[in-house]
Image (cartoon, rainbow, N blue to C red):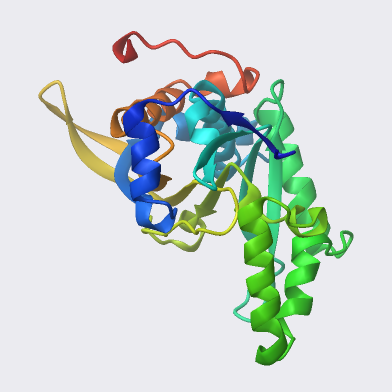
Length: 284
């Protein structure tokens, strides 16, 4: 009985057999690389900035992904001990540098997205959490603190300790102090590689924790595309999306990507509550 999720008991035969054939998450890692049109999103963010807003593209990406998870709940699932569970919350995580230099330490940031949150609320959550660490107003706790301690232990002690923690993770009895601020216990991990002028990359998911999805976002670039037989210059952003194929099938993942694109085409949707239902005729 897990405290962080509810068990999904009604599964099809194929769904259960796939878990038996591929008991590990790393063996079930599927990758989708897709360029998304963010032209309307760029216009939207530019307009906000002209009005004095500090909202960034990353903030809009996080909110858009959060809305997608609420509309596509299977993306918020994970497999543990050959059972399927759905997270009780939608939590998006990422790694942030405390300062922008090679030697800067990194911290794990967890951003819970509540049902009624909108873009403005999510933007504030992200800014508050990141600035708290960079301004040294927030002390490392939970997994962030534990990693610093474990990492300094000699091999003869650290290896068996980590092995014990992995066993506890598998049984769902890892101490709460090691789950708090642990990105491997989020709904999805995101990485904004566009901020360092890099394209989206393939990044594996891990067996440790309960996170079944990972998305990297590349740099936004002008590219020529053909629309209705005419050439146009559009703003495109490459997305690298990794999923545990045992939580849903390919059709479900592709439809989820279409919802994400729909949000980018209609960025005003980001102002609605995170759990607001998105209707798309082409998805039915």
